[in-house]
Image (cartoon, rainbow, N blue to C red; front, top):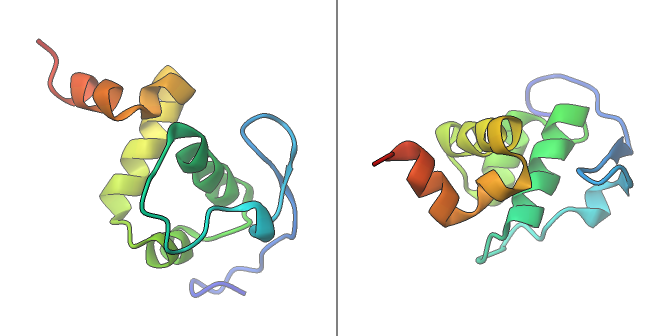
Length: 93
């Protein structure tokens, strides 16, 4: 059970449709975030494998940072998670 009181399931579908388990998620001490890893964390939260609170604590993220990843995936797909793309979408010219 997560800190928010929800029960979690053991397997969800990852960004590419393959099964995603806790063991498949990026390591908690990850220093380099590539789009694929961000998408895995978003898929885990969306699928109920991990709560938003637990994801933010595990990866030292702010809620706003996680939500920006989620929004980027929703609006632009995996390409939207590239740091240059995120910066471009936040500060259009």
